[in-house]
Figure 1 (cartoon, rainbow, N blue to C red):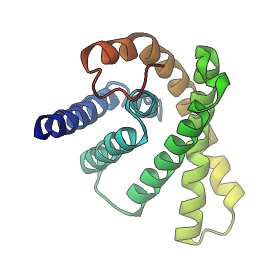
Figure 2 (figure 1 turned 180 degrees about the vertical axis):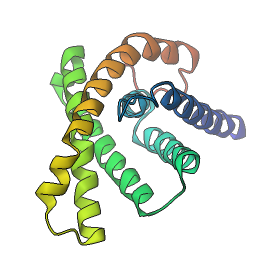
Figure 3 (figure 1 turned 90 degrees about the vertical axis):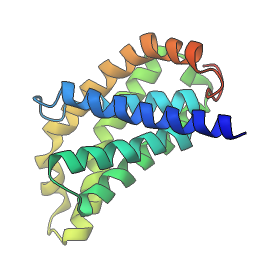
Length: 175
């Protein structure tokens, strides 16, 4: 039992480290990030608990690295948790078996990140106009949408089979 727990914790830690390292590869492009696609992949592979755990650790590491923690950290975490929950619900449908539909939904969820984050920012900071605030970030949402679609396709095609082969005991179920 302890061995299983150690494997699971090690998996979460290694995946969070990989996601944090991966985010550095595209840091020079505004919001063109692979981390959401990676979180979706981990959720697909091992389930919501694992995807959420990897995401929370990655966000905390990223915010420590880029300027500290604040209310925005919680907004990011809640936005990603909502997206991972929507992803998990999508994965329960029959249409989720088609790769191209997975890529489209992953991209759409990437686009929605800014919306969920904007709702929380507007409420917290008492900003006067949600639409103006949200529309200012649509370019960044589009960038995250494209990056998430591209990277999810790559991860699903190349990384997911490796995970199933190397750590089958963590896998939720074969997709």
